Image (cartoon, rainbow, N blue to C red):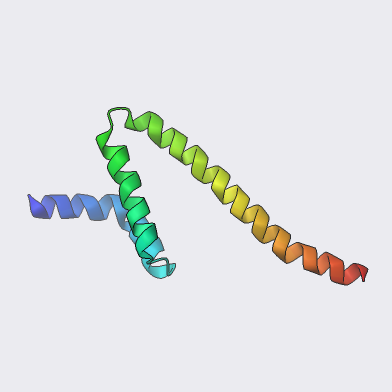
Length: 83
């Protein structure tokens, strides 16, 4: 049973583990947060609806991060060209 569960876990989570290891995001708070998200998603009876909501929230958060990074990199370049 343990080998079966391990194979299933590797099969479904290998991309997440790769991002965490190679993206240097091995922070305890991120791991705990992801664990809570997966636990809630797997245990609540309406997990599919929760997944869609969580996906929407993460897309918005990614857009905010991307907009902030764009603003930080583009604005100094534009100001240096003007001045």
